[in-house]
Image 1 (tube, one colour):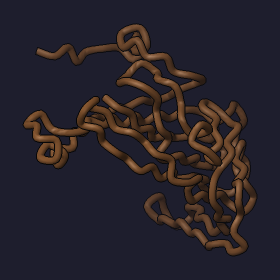
Image 2 (cartoon, one colour):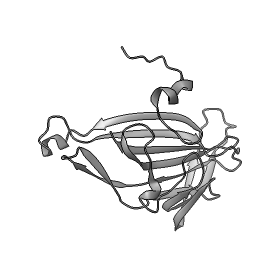
Image 3 (cartoon, helix red, strand yellow):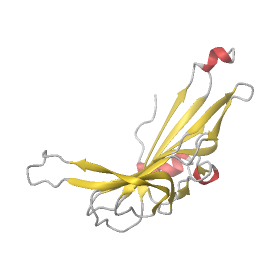
Image 4 (cartoon, helix red, strand yellow):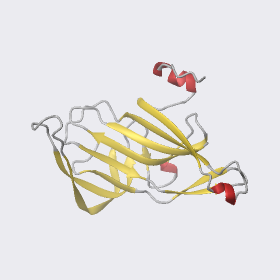
Length: 197
């Protein structure tokens, strides 16, 4: 039977992971692509890819601007090699990015589009005196992020590839990044990485 009664305080010691900065949550999933089994003439399946989700504080300052978010999605072509049972991640550009019109801590869009989008969010669940947001969002391609806990630059494959942190084999490839900006709170950055299992 699995030992599921473990303390978060012992996480790094128990798992052997090496996490940078101030991490507040970690989750990991794996998925085997059985569609490659026929191509590779194997009943063992094809590529097994891991997905590592990490969240951490951007810095120690409390955010005082309007509610919003910033993010980027990097696209990778994946090519599975039956002979060595590994998937190659081929960089496919810096990815679509966005940030609120007033900016976000540590975020610089590499190429900015001339147009902006209106983003709204409202909920009366907490009553009619709840606040709502109505801001303009700047859109672009690529992001240079200098905040915590993991900084990156999506203008090339090296800038959005992170060394192994203790799970799987080889490097981790940044797929998605997002910062949630809530007035009166410390901004939280969330990352999704893919890797070879």
